[in-house]
Amino acid sequence: MIRSLRVRLMLAAAVLALLFMLALLPALQKAFSLALQESIEQRLASDVTTLISAARIENNELMMPVLLPDERFNLPDSRLLGYIYDRQGNLVWRSRATANENINYQPRYDGRGNEFARIRQDDGEEFFVYDVEVKLLGGKNAAFSIVALQPVREYQQTISGLREKLYLGFGAALLVLLLLLWAGLTWGLRSLRQMSVELDQVESGAREGLSGEHPRELLRLTRSLNRLLHSEREQRGRYRDSLGDLAHSLKTPLAVLQGVSESMAQRPEEREQARGLQSQIERMSQQIDYQLQRASLRKSGLVRHQVQLRPLVESLCGTLAKVYRDKTVQVDFAMADDARVPMEQGALLEMLGNLLENAWRLCLGQVRVSLVQDGAELELCVEDDGPGVPADQRERILQRGERLDRQNPGQGIGLAVVKDIIDSYDAHLTLTDSPLGGAAFRIRFLVD
Image (cartoon, rainbow, N blue to C red; front, side):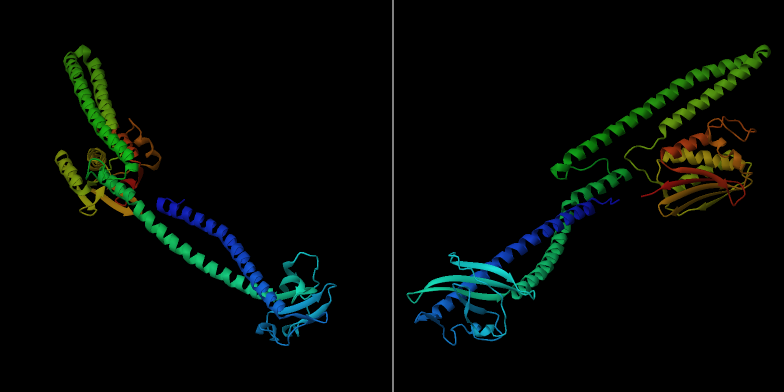
């Protein structure tokens, strides 16, 4: 499928221009053919007039000079032939140019005066014929058909030459037309290209909206897009504020319940109930955090973010090194210093935070973070040298509440949050074995 608007318009214009020229060619050839035949008719009529002016009647007999004023009648190889027939159709005179010709023509003496026709001989050769009925010659009664003939092959050669020139001329005209159309479309679509550049700048965060410097046909579209961008920013701000208010309002009653459970735990007879209550409070807290993270870390519509990866990973690793101060972990960075990931910073921080925390907690002493671009795909990979994940358990641990590590506290929502974030960016997560010996979490993004 052709995705370029300019190419589509060019193809449509080229097809229409070609169809127009193909329809115009036969009409031009027909018009030229009729004009050429009319010219031949007028010329033959003039040649017949020459014969009539040279003829005279003596003693009721037709007399013609040996040499005619028009040299073409006198030359044996001439393409102009002259004949004179009486009323009964008998040939009474022929020009010298007809010496080697055997024309089978029967004139019509029917009172029509003159006739222009096209005849075909038995050998296939064709002639244009101009036949004039004469009743008076030099003031004396006469009854003759004076005929001038010309071979059609000259006419056919002229038409054939014209056809070749028309094809060449129309081909050159079509090429010039297509070049002009391409230049015109390039100039005409310049505004769309400028709009595309501005949209790229909006996506990259370089500008907040589209400018008003566009043709009036596009202004309605640009205004609509600007309203959409503004509405999206406002909605996203209100959404985040509401989520913050919700988190704050829920933390207070949960803190009260936590205090109640701790008071209950001081009484031996209620210790069991307190443990159950604390477990449910912890579960509610983590579920609230999960739902808030899931709702707030969606990518934002038209705006496409690009976050520099290495500084963020180094910051997370520094934090994890303090948390796991009793564990020495070597972190390898396989990425360019200016490598970027097409995600919002908060979403990327949450995703990598969960993946690196898992890798740090389960590794033996080595973690690797890499970013590699392969064609239209960008792959971010977090690996460790820990125990890894059995192949039959890889799908299960990505589900909410599922965990393989039962020795550490938690509800198993970290990887579920990671998967939700990745899905929201139309990326793809796969869990494989790492060359380091542990698990490898690979996230693939499609890049433009």
